[in-house]
Length: 325
Ligand SMILES: NC(=O)C1=CN([C@@H]2O[C@H](COP(=O)(O)OP(=O)(O)OC[C@H]3O[C@@H](n4cnc5c(N)ncnc54)[C@H](OP(=O)(O)O)[C@@H]3O)[C@@H](O)[C@H]2O)C=CC1
Ligand SMILES: O=CC(=O)O
Image (cartoon, rainbow, N blue to C red):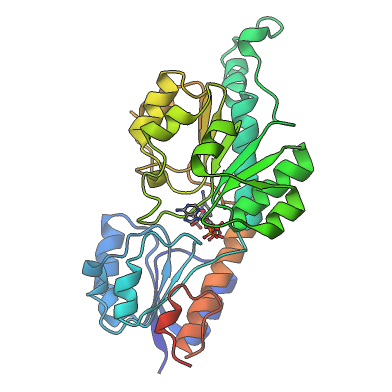
């Protein structure tokens, strides 16, 4: 008998056809109140789940006694209680690698947009306020040659280092759990303590996961270490930052600008002070959002799920202790 799969993310026709060949599929098209009610109805039959952007807590998982595998269409796994999944022996997989380059592109777009004030000045043109040649009040700052500071030197951090070093001649400094000799060799990158990096970098970029250890890693004390010309970029997770402290630092001129793809609460509320600041570029968690990459992520998640349901080890298993050869 075919296994039951519940999708809470719509897939391309090609991937839907692949899933339908191998499983009975229930599709929850959107996670509004109606969709969530349909999800709760479907969970008691589910052997596999595939989707993203939903906090799958124990209360929801307890509705699914037969659940064998979850395939997240994301690399970040902060929406899952991994200990609980492991206790229940549910295989959790994610989609690393396929989104690395695209997310690093987004990070670099935020670096350029904040430093060169792209959004602010483009809005000025749209508003009919471009009446004479630009003067110093509208000048930005250079990106090339400035020091790129990367916090979390993993896949995306390394791809950002490549762009900065090879494309823009930027000295790269980084902070991670441990030094990365291969990255140091490729990009002439240098390891720093967190405090040193915050004091020395022109661009401070977060590329680490949200974990118990990184939650609110960057708060008032850390912003106080940055320089008034520093630009802060977050493409990791909003909760790695104390957002109130970020707003305070921007308001007080303790840092120059921020490029933010992620926020404490998403979607970002329209009344957020961040949206009143010309020196903030806010994007809607679009790090991996290109046609090509989102399709590659979905394909990767489908591969992971079908492998798990067929009794094979998924390529991107997040909780390997569940697996028994
Ligand atoms: N904005 C968006 O749309 C996207 C956001 N993301 C976010 O980016 C994150 C990173 O993805 P990816 O690069 O693939 O992940 P990786 O696991 O490859 O890299 C994360 C790095 O962070 C480091 N790290 C973890 N905890 C700490 C800490 N406490 N202090 C210092 N360094 C730490 C790790 O360092 P070490 O190796 O030394 O342990 C690791 O190398 C994801 O978890 C996700 O949250 C990802 C994709 C898109
Ligand atoms: O935020 C996106 C992810 O893949 O993680």
